[in-house]
Image (cartoon, rainbow, N blue to C red):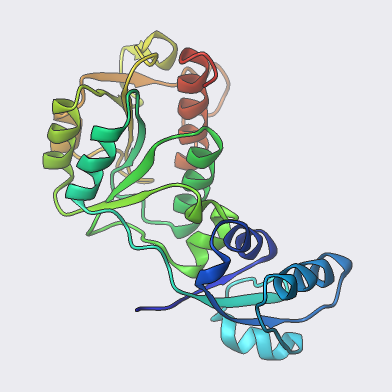
Length: 244
């Protein structure tokens, strides 16, 4: 089984809370009360810890901020198209976040964190030309990658058609849309579709959406970071669904 690295206090704490059995190794510098408490929690879960200094952690982190802790773990396998279908079959009113080509791992992690916080059913990304689950995206997600299903699909347009066949209302966010997010029908089963940081949604993705909306911005800024826009849309959907 493949192994990956996670680093940062929140990312490691999230992994410890959800799946301590998947943690294989831990490198920790107990240089603060927070790290000392984390080390105690890891030890209480029966996980052995290798104490080391900051320089040793830097060598393992590949330039990613580790905050004094790195773990090697066995990651949960992402959902495939068929796994996503099975998830939709089980849920009465699913809410998906679909990301079309988000390439920055920090943005991906932030989107996953917002999706988990809003109680979304899954995050869906294309296999190619998009960021995946890496140490950087896991750190940005602050433990959320272990709390919400993550689906990687080969053909995003085809998957959006399938999502529509399951009765989800597919709402795409586009800056040139006439309707606003607050006019969207989000109280039922829905998929929020976000485009890439630079180009937005691709044409085929856009064509699969049932409705295009924009986030109204009366201020001087014309656009939002994709992770911020995803958070706004997810929590508007949560509000429309009665907060549950």
